[in-house]
Image 1 (cartoon, rainbow, N blue to C red):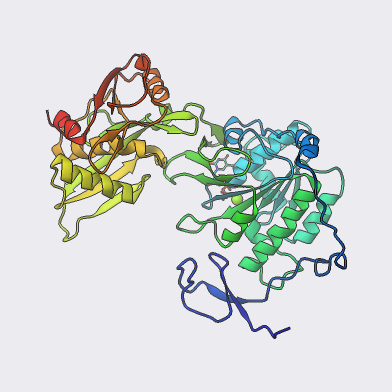
Image 2 (tube, rainbow, N blue to C red):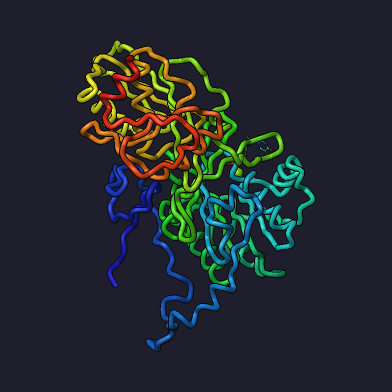
Length: 457
Ligand code: TYD
Ligand code: MG
């Protein structure tokens, strides 16, 4: 076997190099390569069975009973169960990422307590806090009496041995995967090799024991789950817990889910006694709306199966810079550039000498192209100084030609707007029948020129 030189591993994405270099070619991060020992082989996995066939195959239809044995375990927290797709799947592994202090440990302690109170064995392993600190948090939420097994441990072999004692746990939480280390991997804790090795061992435990495993992962400044990008590929579901520091809202979103949808969101509010569920997010996002200001438009959006109304705020102001600024919070940068270009080309707006700021109120991140029309309305309103009717909602996708295209599930959007007291909707002229439109006055537009003319009028 050829002699192996040192190996350099990118701590951001896990790419492996045999020579040091300043920039990782795979993810573009600078100075992220560090020398690490090669990942240890799977223990006992070098020779399997002297070439004898050991991997078993099964006929698909004979496995029917296996899947039926494994009903989902509902946490009893509606917003969490919605995002997982109806509860945790036994034997599955879930990675939950989020900024420090966003409330990951809080959410998971609440889920653990709820499951433990329903009579299941639940183990919460903290690598960051002592058991006393974890108990303090539980006390604050009034959950100190829940029969959750706590451990403050960072060595995965010890953890797996501990989990083997007593009855099989239904749920195991590892807070966080970056603090774990395995004695079988020769690297410092926190390095990609350690994180990957520890995750592999824990995942193997979950798959063989049938326990549901939740790994907490820290994220970097730009929102990536730090170090273990590699772990994202090893787990069944990746959830992110988001929120703006200034707001009490927290949004749980599935980025990947082998057992459920990826477009559902769970909305929570951080209170003095832990996280409380927000079952009507629209009312929350619109709560402190400034009624009579130019540049504000209410977008009737859909998150998963649930309609969510949010306010889109735009500020278009004369610039003092050579290149005007475009800044976006909660929406896609390139989508804004597109809407601006369409408004300039087809709507006759002059934006070359203006800075443009766009914000989705309440800390929500909107991903739907259906928000185009609300964004365009907010921009035109801010530039012209004309206030949009406050009892109106907007939805519709804008094409490069300036045409306003129909979007999906219009009736649900209209019903939600009607429920919250809105009176009219500005929407695309084409598209499926919308029934009675939820009792709203429907104003249908086919092109951005009509929108610009309408706001200016
Ligand atoms: P935590 O769950 O420790 O965050 P993470 O595990 O994601 O780092 O939450 C920490 C923050 O939440 C901290 O700023 C205090 C706040 N908090 C409350 O406001 N109310 C509560 O009941 C709890 C437990 C925490
Ligand atoms: Mg924590």
